Length: 177
Length: 108
Image 1 (cartoon, rainbow over the protein chains, first blue to last red):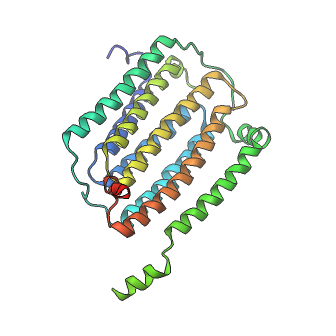
Image 2: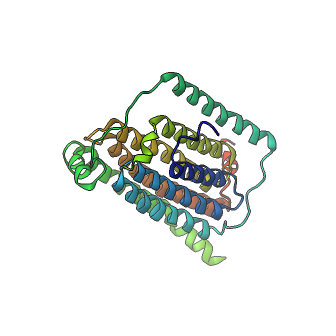
Image 3: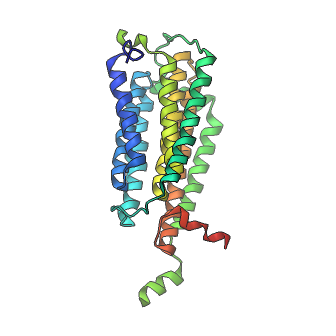
């Protein structure tokens, strides 16, 4: 544990919880437990954002991810009645292959960063992550992407409604049954 | 920022995000439930978001380009989740399964 000894304790605890939550998302048999673990992970990532002086980002992360998207996932799980251990068991070979692939990626990226020698000092700039600064940048430099985002959202909404709608034949069929 | 956090370096955030991203990748490769696949993709996106926020802070970029990217990634993730879940619901309605390995019947 010599590597970790000079790190601040809050960061260590947060990172530990983040990784633990992520592992539980992947390994849990029950999908509802996975969703709840993912919400825990998002909360800890929000705490990391606060540590990184990205206060607005932390709140938006909580509202959008933990609030909206995860509730959507939970709704769909409950709607499809998948809140039981319904997943077929994969063979061990598949798990080993997946673990080797992901582990290789981890090793390669870690090794690449170790030799890269990134020397970035912590800046003393204040107020980067506050609403005032972010809003100014969003409305001046990133105005066109911001508007395109609106179009993307409208098309995603229309697409989701179109996909989720039953067509008439289905309704008739289900009524006959 | 409190003084106890001055010993934190960008490399610690790089390693944390790499571990998170690898866990997400493992989930995408390992799990079969399509909803959990989407959740693992969200996990990978969040790892990248964390790294972007870390670099914004350590570079002291007043334009906050990294944080802007995080916003746009969040938007794309929300749209992707909405459309992806709609597709999963539609597939479930037709096949009564959310198993991705069941979907290879398209090749027959």
